[in-house]
Length: 118
Ligand SMILES: [Zn+2]
Image (cartoon, rainbow, N blue to C red; front, side, top):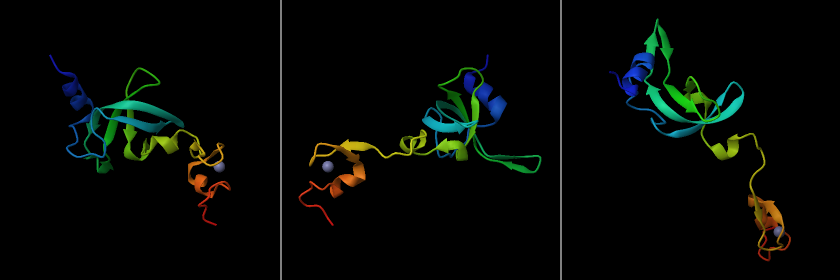
């Protein structure tokens, strides 16, 4: 009888003692041109195989598809999900001066702002 952790260790190698993201954490990452979210099941420690450096691998259960877990490298992980999901536009906020919608960093420039910096 083997535990799930032992199975991951057999498949992917020992759990990394240090990593930017930890087992059980939720991440957003890119996979085959798509942005996915998922839960880290295992973090395989960096190693050398046949003379090649293999970086830390994150084994991730994808929310969007079931089946075999994704192998995700640090470079594929989207650090700030708010800027990632394919939207370039900054968040709009309701302006306290004119009641309209502005980009969050534009409110201070609203013509109705009495203390507007020019
Ligand atoms: Zn305004």
